[in-house]
Length: 416
Picture (spheres, one colour):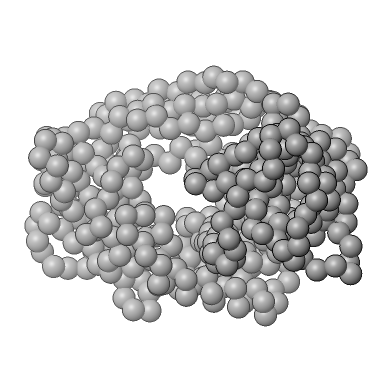
């Protein structure tokens, strides 16, 4: 098994020391040691300080490197670990959260449950932890209570469970990039309401993208509101948000959505559904809970787009390759900033009243529009594109102007 994380080169020595400490435990438990390697040295430019979040007068360039942790979870007597199951109390009893070993499949029978069992001893009693094992030859799955693992395997399971619990991303979260927390859990509605307010103010940013491209991840901003410390109050007050009725309403919609979502064969949705049913967020799942708001809004956007597209005729190609079209009235339906190998540009996706899609990449400064703007475009047809069965006309050398306000977005013939 190999896990990879991108870290600052300045933290290489600390990571090496951390892995050596873990390897000492490996040697003590008699299990194979982990191997750490590095490659892909590169630099990342930050416009904001990665610790304080303050705007910098000039970009901060940080040297990065990819760290690879290679190790093997022992297979004991033909049994390998698939997942760990932990139970958390809730209003309607227990709620089981599943932490799967990377690249392992967890059958649906072990998801969406409110109890921990042991298929080895079969004894019915209150349990808080178990492990899901699979036989490498027969493919049989077996849930074994944590206190029965040694008896089931006939070996000391500590090394087996220790390696299975390795969380490389957490090991790579160094001081200044992650913060220790005091409270073990928070109410789900409170967390989701704060998350909605943070996204409303700062936008959504995952931990992975924040680490590689700069900025503070949304989950850290949520923590700053839940447990503001001296650093937040002195240097990062902009992270503090005010919750309004819209944020609370959104939180309620998110909970309702995940309570009823079809989580079949989807571990992410299964855990989201479990957290929604629990009504609170264990600290270790804070990032998970915050992502529920972004995931919900993304799904609602896709649904709204699909419904809007269903009301329009299918998109068709416009004109001929090389033809110059003039003053076509379109509505901007999507924009995305792209920083590629050939420089930065913005992808614009536009639609005319007939339902035809137009796309262009624009890197100039003469015009800039947002989703929902109605504009007049003049451009040269570069190619007729098709993606997932949907046709679009790709343009270049595009000139855009504001559409006359006294005209309506209609199906009038455009000029060719």
